[in-house]
Figure: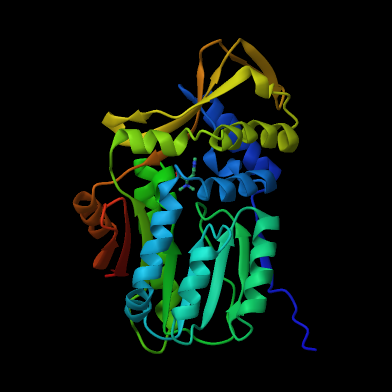
Length: 331
Ligand code: AVI
């Protein structure tokens, strides 16, 4: 019986000191914030996977069906011998669909902050795609990245950034990341024999009825509330804070001026806690902003991509125009 060893994982995960620094900084802002990347400990990743299955959470379902319908066109746009670099690899359902359609992919490089989730998902992918070189990076894609060395030369590097995770960044953060991705594919592809431009396959959640949006982030089963509160449990465990979870309530309104859902944890009573020798007081009624989820209009987003070094080649949307998958090339 053939045995299969797990794909290698390059460890660039944020140290506790980085997490501490980021949490201290965001807690000191007004309104106070907490970095949304720390939703994703093992429990948070599990909860997020469950959110993706919720009837109200149209995002994953819509993107997956777009993928099902147009994956052949996507694979044709990317071409043969691609190195697919996936940012925030999650559970890999969409990836599986894409990988199985690609023409002789050179390698798959998932970048994911939640180690257990990553190891689990690449282990399964490794079994399903035994011929494919998989080289994982456990790390934060918001930080400058180093790609692992590959055993064969890809024809093109493509960043795959599905799920509209781009929407979880601030506007400035998203712009900086789009520029960084174009630098990354340009830099990585410099040595490639066939000098084809690097690519970006990006999922973006589009603007829609506020009731649909608010239902997606305030689900009846309460999973999004649990996901939001789990951020505090993660901080308590990793940073040794003692923030009482029952002192906070989940809320996620759509803020029209900012074109985004704002997830918050609102203090139900006055809360005091210590972090790294500093005392924090959250007053009753005060919010901790835990996540933005921006919703985009397609045309301005194209311009934004162009301003960050990307030329849009193809856009796929569903009949309701809920979600778009954009393929762009580095200019
Ligand atoms: C990962 N990200 C795109 C999700 C979103 O919809 O913004 C995270 C999420 N937050 C609450 N529900 C899902």
